[in-house]
Image (cartoon, rainbow, N blue to C red):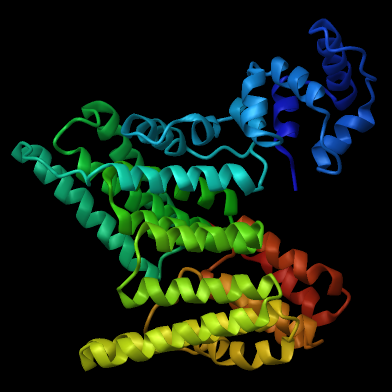
Length: 452
């Protein structure tokens, strides 16, 4: 996985030997002593194999205009982000003005120069989430004030479009790429209005809530595209926007979605912390958030090899569903039941996968895969291809290469074409088996079908 330092070095237009020489010279000029200028050091820093000494980091930070105090405060490698567009995510306070600054940074069009890893993990991530919880505890929710009729109409139009985008989470015939572009456009409009009107404007409460909602949509669509870093940046901004508005349910949902990304891409301990922070933000009473958090927790605990705790969390999710079935009107429950049951099956399958029980995982994934692949009038979920990745993993582990290849084919066909990030995940899993004809054809199919 590429390192932020690689981007910073490229921004200076230096090769690894040239960068090593410049760091050594800066180290000496700052009075920090002599430092060997070896290309191998830079290579190891960028690969993550070793961490530079503190004084070396101070010299490197000086090159990029970052104070030594930030090296102490954030630690390696997080201070390196202060020289990129992600600086606002790390440096801005949890205030309305800070939230606006972060939103302005994340609303800019994505650039391809950033490394693909997550921006925050470990202590810096925990610190930010605790600051969000402190903000919620310290301030009252913003109350929308009266606005002129023209602005009221404009806000109502944005809210209607965002609600329509949110509805696509439950099934869509549109490409996640196109949906992401539409959601990102709405976010940029909201951020433009926030920056122009100011966070003291009577419309600020609605605008911050809309910024959080568009961030959530961009976050789950970023996950559907296999772009974990892009998704994380939007969700971190959504936490700030929701905290600025004092909107606890939106803070909790953003934290829960962050937990999903850290489970897959980051560290399980960070994902578990995020689930618990989401519960602290708002002790859930509604069925959907409660079931989701129990499901996330079950899979996270499985990844941590805590089998008994994982099964207990999954049982809690099942009990929540049973309670919801008795408390919800029958017509509403019938519409939700299939989705919830499939979600439970998929979570249980992922749990057993992480517990190294692929046969149990396969039994639970089978009805999910059959449902996803069955011809029907309803549209597929945007995350269909992401769920099929688990099926590919399971069938490869069981040596069922033909079935794994079929799942990969279907992922391409159902989505129209796999986006770049997600296609990379499929190829990484299938490439070791390329010599098998079925796998080779599946890999070729990914090259044959392109996004518009």
